Amino acid sequence: MGRSAVGHHRANPGRLADHSVIVAAQSVSTHGSSPQRPRSRPKSAVDEFGDGSLAHRTNRHDSTRDELQNDTQEPNACTAPDTDQPYRRRPTPSTRRPIPTATDHKRTRGRVRSASGIEGGKRMTAAIIDLDGTVYRSKTAIPGARDGIERLRDAGVDVAFVTNSATKSRTQCLERLESIGIDAEESEILTSATVTASYVASEYPEATAMAVGEPALFEELSRADVSLTEEPADCDVLVAGKDRSFDFETLTRSLHALEAGATFVGTNRDRKSPTDTGNEPGSGALIAAIEFAAEREPDIVAGKPNDPIIEVSLDHLDADASECLVIGDNPETDIRMGTRAGMTTVLVLTGLVDRTDPAATNGDADHVLESLGAIESVLSTD
Image (cartoon, rainbow, N blue to C red):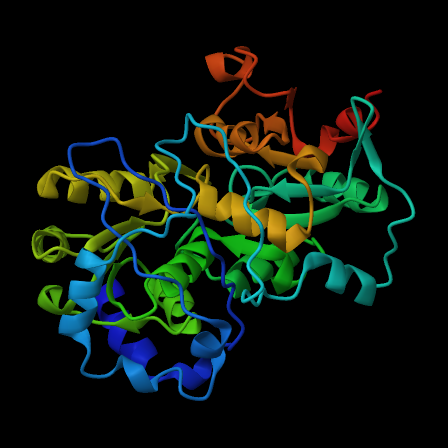
């Protein structure tokens, strides 16, 4: 599925929207036996969006591979050794061109920020809301989710839907929300595929990527103007996500790309995803297979709970972490992301865990709710 999508998206770039999230995400070194690979310097805004942005991409594979291997890391680049380390936000570069913000569309819908949510005496101005297991499960709405979202908006809280899914595009997520009666805009949605593509485009602007994933991942890479290949020998960056057609051939091609020296980027490490018929393996399961075969961990994982998705989420909402809620069903991703960033964390019991799970009682989350519909109890805390 993913392999055929490469040629499809490269041949039809006009089908894709031209607005990309460009994030100077933080580099995360791994704690395995493999040393951290040097990264290439981010390109300027002119390089990213100028008329000649594609001109320098031809006949440059060998020099790009050498640059990725030999370039030294910028002295001011922030690193975090693992997700147990707290997130430290860095200033937004002036060269970044973000997608339209949630507050832009909020104003066009006639909403005003005349009120704000209050949690523990703090003013909450923004909320990061997970989708799968929090708002819907497959195509089924989770009871109370719509009411909870409207309560947040009525309280003047800006909302961003931030999902670790790399198998649905932002447009597909929007269609799913609208199908269950939730008013939203595409600009309010971020996926791990969005952030991964943005990270590759900004950190490795000259690189050619090979992707393991479904059409949504290829779409986001194309929207970010990342050059794609199907050949492991031509691959500078291997991007791995969830792929329901993942097979031995895919694993072998991925192994060959990494053995040839490609940088290893993962969309997320989700072990499993909740569906209407039960849990299914997540991106992390497939990444683990590649990791085991290649005997090296990803150089960076862009999705929750890691720095790149924290960075772009806060910039997208134009919010400080101390004034932001993060609401989700996954303790390993949603709650850990919020804890690392200093956000107020809300664990909902509508997805991966229930009251019998230690994660619901160990105190890691600031609040534990039966569902998003109970968010009023968080906003009214004083």
